[in-house]
Amino acid sequence: MGRKTACFVLALALAFVCCAAMAKTVEPAGSWNAVMEGLTVHATVGEYNEVTGTFEVTMYEPDQFTVEAVESLAAGDVLLADGRAYTVKEMTAAPDGEPMAVTDGGFEIIFDKNEDGYSARYSDDDRLCMHAFRKLYLAPSPIIIYEDNSDPETDEPKVTEGLENILKIKAEKEETSIGFDFYATTVTLGKNLQILRIRQDFDVAQ
Image 1 (spheres, rainbow, N blue to C red):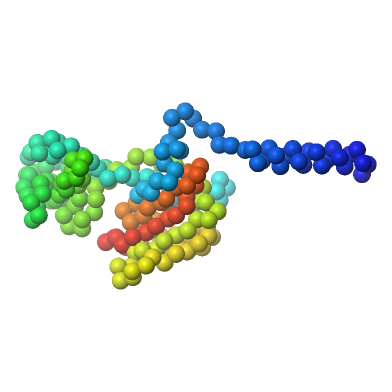
Image 2 (spheres, helix red, strand yellow; image 1 turned 180 degrees about the horizontal axis):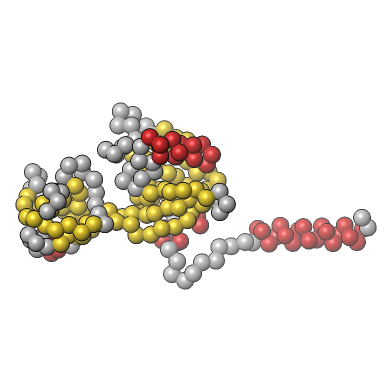
């Protein structure tokens, strides 16, 4: 290789390195990226696509009701909760005094007061009523971890590092329990919406 050719190749290599170092993320105006960076949210972590290097992640948030909506609920009304439509059979009070809707199907939904109004949960297992609000395809961070806090007898969560190890755990849980289901699972997002952490807490369905 001649001296001029070698210098040209070196110049191209340096230009590539400089471009890579200056690379940035371009996103639509009003993007959720800045809002969701650092967020921890309930999510169902679905299939991992090895081609795209992403998980299918469906995100959930608790149902929130206004004080007026809950206090005006009456027999015959339709209650939209937990992604379902329930017909209210009667309104009564839970043992703790909070409003409770008894549905035609026999479900009891308790409304808990908070600073924004009321959240809702089922009386039999205390599961929060939640709804899906966004589905994204997210890449794992190179330093992704999995925290297993599903054993109520253990004080500290068991931490697993690395995508390969986490995928093995995910496959095992999908065979033996509910997998990475949103009731028990949260994800923490980092820069460019990479998944920094998947955490599972105890859930009655496990």
